[in-house]
Every structure is written in structure tokens, then in C-alpha cells.
Amino acid sequence: MYPQDYPNQYPNQYPNSWQPMPPQQPVPEERKGLAIASLVLGICSIVLMCCCCINVITAPISIVLGIVSLATHRGGKGMSIAGIILSALSILLLFMCYQSTEVFWRNSDQIMQDYYQLIENADTVFPAYEKDGTVPDYLQKYYEGEYAEALDKFGVTFDDVMDYLDQMYQQGEFEALQSALGSTGGTGTSSSAPKSSFTGVELAY
Image (cartoon, rainbow, N blue to C red; front, top):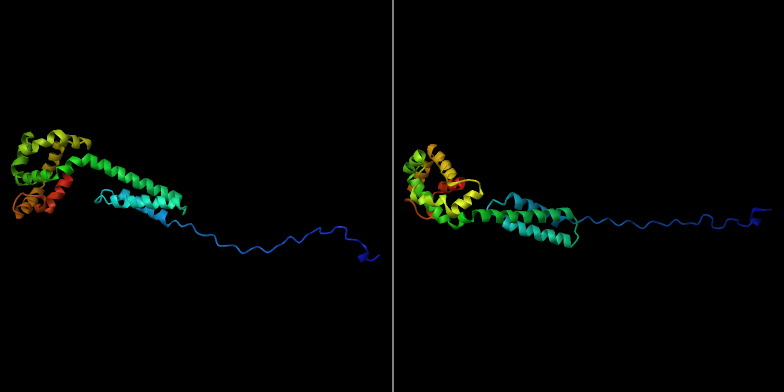
């Protein structure tokens, strides 16, 4: 018998199942730009919180960008969440700092006037303070009431402030302040104050 006489005993044993693969589409990259911006602004809000309260601007922007990134599923979920948390934390810390120092901000004009007067009378105020711890009448209010309570939040007393100012006086730093204050025509409003005297206030408080 010839081969063509044998029936095909195994029809379609190996069906031709191969088909050409469709061309692969490029996987779109996750758009993490908003998440990255939220995280960066969140970090800036924490780091620059005490720099002119700049987090008042950066924190809300960071929170908005983070929420938009999460809502639109743009990727970078972890960075968005971290940015939102850091920004919210910076706002909370700023509020707590303001609550602690609110009395000083509210009475800043009076505090500056007392400070200028202290500079002018430094040659009599500090020797008396070093002798028996006495201070002029216009400084007595800082030992009691809201001033004392505000200082106590930082774990200091007005005597600690006076001790620091007395060290400045002993080191001769008040001589430069007196000269600068004298060149402006004496005490007055904060707008006429020498820049160096405000630095002293920042250090003292």
C-alpha cells in the first residue's frame, strides 16, 4: 500500500495555534509631578516655618496639590500623603508658637519702648541689678501677670532675661546700641529704632 492509502489517524494533532503578538503599547509613566511638589513644599513648610512664617503660603499649596494628586490617581501616593502631613504639622506648630508668644506680639510696641529706655539707662540699671537684683519700675510688670506666664511657657523668668542682657552690658554690646540709639534722636516708636536693638530683643526673648 502506498502512504496515501493510509487514513490520517491523528487529524489536527498539532493545530496551528501560533498567532502574531500584537505590538506592545508603551507603559505610560506615572505622573508624579504634583506629588513631588506637595512633598517638597511640605518639607519647606517645616524647615522654613520660623522664617517669616513662610509656611502660611507653602503649606496650603502643598495640601491642595497633595489632595489633587490623590484624587486624580496620578501616582506618588506616599509622597502626596507625606506632603499633606508635613504641611498640616507645620501649621499646627506655628499656631502653637503664636499662642505661646501672643502676649509679646500684642504688646510689642510697649516692649520696644521699655527696651529703648533700658538701653539709654543701662549704666544705672545694670549696676543696680548686679548689686541687689532691683530693676526700674517700668520693668516690674514683666515679673507678673501675662508676661510671667508667657515666659514660664519657655521655662524662663524675667530674671533670666535680665541676666542675659546684663551679660551683653558687661561685654560692652550696649555701648554700640546706645550710640546707635543716640544717633536716631532718643527713644520713640519702633520705626525709629536702630536695627541692632531689635536683634537684641530677638536674642533676649
